[in-house]
Image 1: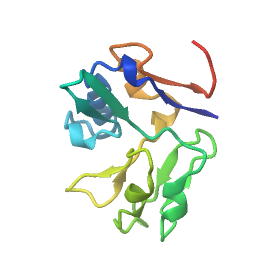
Image 2 (image 1 turned 180 degrees about the horizontal axis):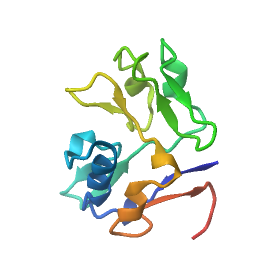
Image 3 (image 1 turned 90 degrees about the horizontal axis):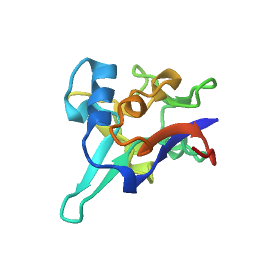
Length: 140
């Protein structure tokens, strides 16, 4: 199964991935609405992309008390049943990668859905290789 792969040392913090994700999903360039976030350590010149890597453990799915999260069998991405989600934030707390967040105006989590297998963030990454989508262990 394909997954997101992050190379922190390649990220320049340009946020083109963040903007493209927000626009692809919500027709806005609001950074909070993006499924990918950049943690900035500007004093050290380091930037850390945070996005769901579609981990094998699926802690977020396991902890959901109302089964609002599931795994798409074709793409392997986390799916959210918006009608079932109660906004408890258990998934946000359970994610060891910090890849799930909530936007104040929305009571459901913002989680990467891999754009149906064509992640917009990968296509617009200004530093090729900082964010990749492929088979685990795949070489460039």
